[in-house]
Image 1 (tube, rainbow, N blue to C red):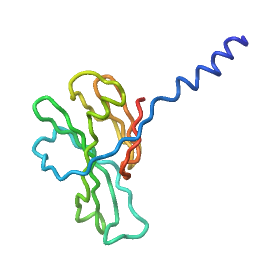
Image 2: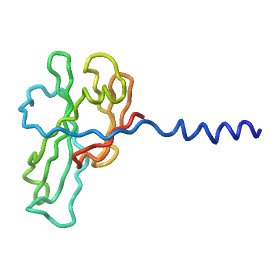
Image 3: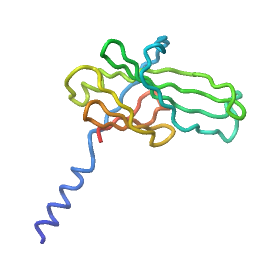
Length: 147
């Protein structure tokens, strides 16, 4: 019994914590809306007090496809009074090449599938059979972990 307890105590932390990386987002003004193959918006985070007429903020995860290759983007959208006046305030690329390098993925830069929003600033996605969690979409560098 002691041997099993010893194994569980030391194996559990190894199994429960995966690789976590910080990844810089790249500000972009590319007009690639005609290439969008997927778009999902997270919940709106309503502010207690408006800031420059902005009352709510949400983030969108976008996948574009050119030929067979995917690109990933995170947009910040703002809302005015009572949800009106939706505007894109920033658009940043989540570099798929860097995800492949950081996590040792092989193959074409394709196969991106959205999972679900976990919070207004975090979401899950898959590349082939590899599942990832992206956190801190409101920052210049996101945390990305393989789950």
